[in-house]
Length: 434
Image (cartoon, rainbow, N blue to C red):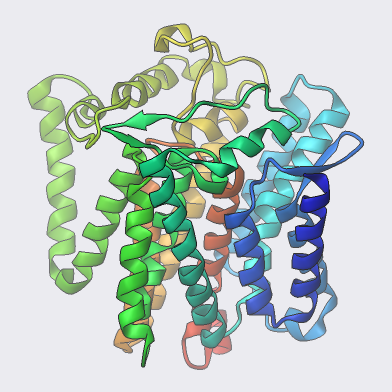
């Protein structure tokens, strides 16, 4: 598989060097979505995936191009991303117990998956046409991926799962999992939660295509339905809850006056549930709001353990040492299915603050842009981006991203960072809102 990986990386790298920046970014996104990140090229101790090769070349192209660099304007969100990356690099380097060279290898790979991915999006998307072109491209890529999900869910044939045997660090091929009579589709991400999440992450932007002219209006609806079906094929509660939340957020676009009363109602409900049930509200939510049953109790117990062991991780995480909560969870190891807690046990409270800061800054940026324009189509676009951030804020309580899904998360943050390019006279607006 090394030869195949090198070939795909070479083709994608050639394309990102010569295509327009926005199209080059779409090629990079496609390489992340359709090719597993566990199929790597080994160079000594380094494991280099297709995505890392392509993003390095694309970022180098952006930095070497004066035309691309001069369109870049620094934003507050960029500062939060930089702050988060500095933390994620320095804290493990100081506190982790793993050998120095292994630290450098891990952190350099993480930098390419997050920091590079974000700024490639920021550099490459500089116009409305470029943003829409990327969304159209991804919407089309989701079609064969959803078809694969349907095949996997109904037949159990999962071709990418078999490729795990070529992964250098995999000990065994995980068996196909079933739920309610269907196999849980995994696709190129080889994990049902991450597979379903990939569709939901891009669904609001794909749904925006209904505002485009000509054939893209009906295609926008068709591609949105296709992406929704793709999420459902994962048969995972996390993506299903994300999909339901996304549909609610997109529906509220037509009933914006209901948004504030709904938020107030939810806050009052949380307080009321805690008082009436005499237990933490997240235990009640985990018990009664899981559409597929599953391990909602695990998420609730994980939050209890994070609070109970706060004094162990708040300063700098666990430094690469075993977390040790597994016995309390009925497991031999600690499965941290919460992105906020994951940042905490890795980087301490500063890591949690950085993640929350990125999400809040993204939401505030989208809100400012939404309030800046009077164009209903642009308002719809910014509402879609805001829906993505809200869904992520909620879903991070029930799942932790890794592999391609984590990189796609940073790509979407980069698209949010460049969202001001949709506005007329965007350079002036971007400076006013930076």
